[in-house]
Length: 283
Image (cartoon, rainbow, N blue to C red):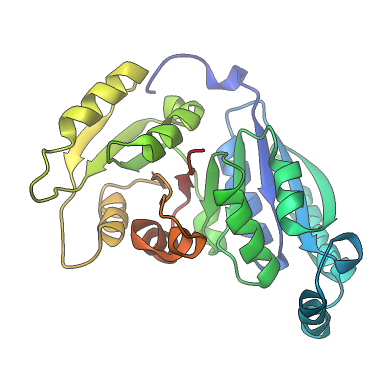
């Protein structure tokens, strides 16, 4: 174990955002894995747009009416998610206690309300419209630690946090993520910090060593082997080679939200990751 303190004595609030039935099971499995070893409770929240409870222009209402033809009304979508939650609870008695909440209306507003005070938000990469809105709001609006669950159920079911790989680059984003993830880092059996060499820039190993020593974490620090691919791709490859079961990065801080989600290292990792990814955008 790295760090000090008994993780079993820490009470953590985990908010599992479930905007769609297709990814609800993998999200719940990932949340349960993250909650093991803590006195935690999982709040399983369905957030979905409902024009009757949100301020929406005529164009948005028309989009939602068209969506209802293919996915059913908000009540039907919530019922499908609730069925997944009930099945998971019945089949996983060792999971932390799960409290269900359906919160329809404006997705961004509901995400902000439901995640306030959470120690960890768990959400999967989105498939449908509500899920994309919820994902963006959780990652770039809540300013909380987020654990992005893989869509693959078998991958999400595995243990999370025994060996955490960290994509290290000195700066506020990754440092804030690490500090928010301290309960999981202190519980981890192994932590590996990987840094990418950059031409004309001093190596990042000394800054990593100083930062982790300040936090009292025992971390293996190593340069990231590079290929012709992106840094994000290489981080995932090296994490797999080293047997890491989760990855921690800082969220992109580019100006536009589109760039923030779909640009650079963040985009590549979220597009390819088959393991849970911790990340947070600092305020």
